[in-house]
Length: 252
Image (cartoon, rainbow, N blue to C red; front, side):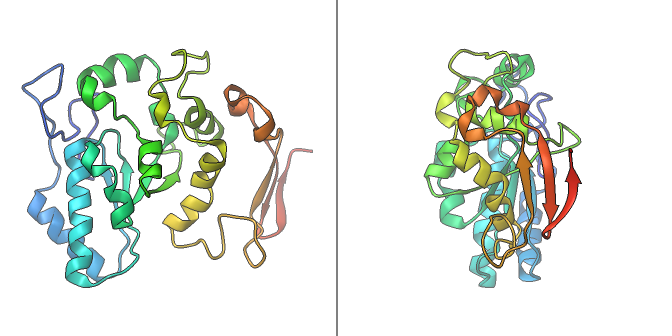
């Protein structure tokens, strides 16, 4: 865990906070010791997940993940960065070039008052303009893995799916969506929650998609997401669940 949160001025930033120039957050690790730890964990074969929210923390994690394989000769480690709430433009393509998993929780970008009036105010216009850059990382070759961050937010993926598609509140605010260029398609949203998550865990050979030879882990939904407006996707319910080909839940 490299840093805190932007709302509390504890996420580590490269430049001072917009609303309080006396603060720029803090790293929970000494950068040298963090890099040493990452290199050693990588050498021992661990897959590493780093919580990094501010642009300074994200950069340090990327730097460490870049250094580890050059020293250890490791291949396809798929180390992850969790949250990535803001990032510098030059660090966006590094996820793809380094093979680092960008692990996001789409509902964290829900554009309510907390996000638009506190988070965005603290970060400032420039950094707030790069809030939760799903599309930018994806189109620059990065791999997305989506989750919920439960119990911080609901375990249900459907509100997160809706926010990935709309970047609007349930009431449709703001009109046109918040940072709409970072919305992603329904197909890619589903992929990030399923195959992307399986790839992030080195489990894509058995999970993450419906293919011969893989586990029959699947759900049947109350509506076809491709046939409903994006703003209604959050109303989806699961009517049947199979794990390993066996029905473990049925709403009927």
